Image (cartoon, rainbow, N blue to C red; front, side, top):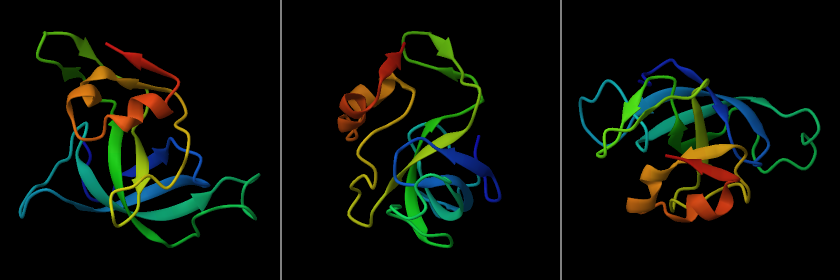
Length: 127
C-alpha cells in the first residue's frame, strides 16, 4: 500500500529515479493507493547518465500510475504475487506516458484496464 510520504522508484525511461508521493488520487479521503491507482508525485532525484537529456527536472510534479507494490496482490483468479520494490510510471496531465519504455515486468491485470498500452511497452508480464 502506498500512502503520502512514500518514496518510490520510477520504472520508465523518463530520466527520474526516485519520486515522493504527495497525494493519493481517485477519492476525496483515500489514504492508501494500490496496484493500478493514480497518485501525485514530486521528482526527488534523476538518473546520472540522463541528466542532460532528461524529460523531467528535479522538483517537477506529475501524476503517476502504480505498477509494482511490495504488498501481496490477489487477482480474480486467486493468483497472488508481489514484487521486491514499489515503483511507478510517470504520466502527463493528459494521462499520456512521459517515457517510451518500461523497465522490468508488469502484472497482467493491466490487460483489463484503460492502460493496456503499458503491456506493449514493458519487457514481460507476470500472472
